[in-house]
Length: 211
Ligand code: SAH
Image (cartoon, protein in one colour):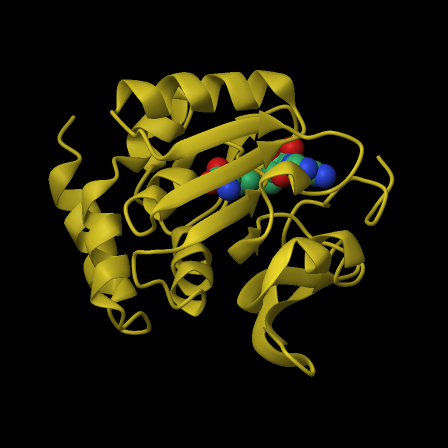
């Protein structure tokens, strides 16, 4: 099957709302069909979330684009992603930043993503299996943090790992429905902006939901 044309059509549809040319460029480049299970490859360029096993999903392309655009990436950033999942968003981010740290709770997903991303030649991605605390404090602070799972509120532990002047994008709300929150960490407090409704799998951990 040829995936070039469907990929182009998806990127064209993103153009109505996504104006950051670098973000659109990354979507034109990363082969989403490789990040979904073989039996779902034909659906890889539908603008929908898809099941990737272990009860988890690869997020809907439009939401991923919206979140990445909101990070305001210029190319020099050190970024933390929570929830590697399939590794698709990690590949997109790696196209746009200096270095990416990505943590995943489910070791099998972390391993599969690691394997695929190194096959594809990404050298600026470090994947870790999540520990007890949210994030990856060892390598903090991060210029940007992007959370691909939903939290009941903005977790303090992640806020601490964000550099002053940094931006965090995180879905916040109930287990079933959330608002996408953009947080600017300032010298004298944080500024919060709401980017609209969304629906993510729960962020599991100390500062978030229980399994
Ligand atoms: N960005 C992914 C989608 C991830 S779905 C992609 O492009 O495919 C959310 C992921 O967050 C799931 O794989 C889930 O296992 C993971 N997750 C949930 N809680 C977590 C935590 N505390 N730390 C790291 N990952 C977590």
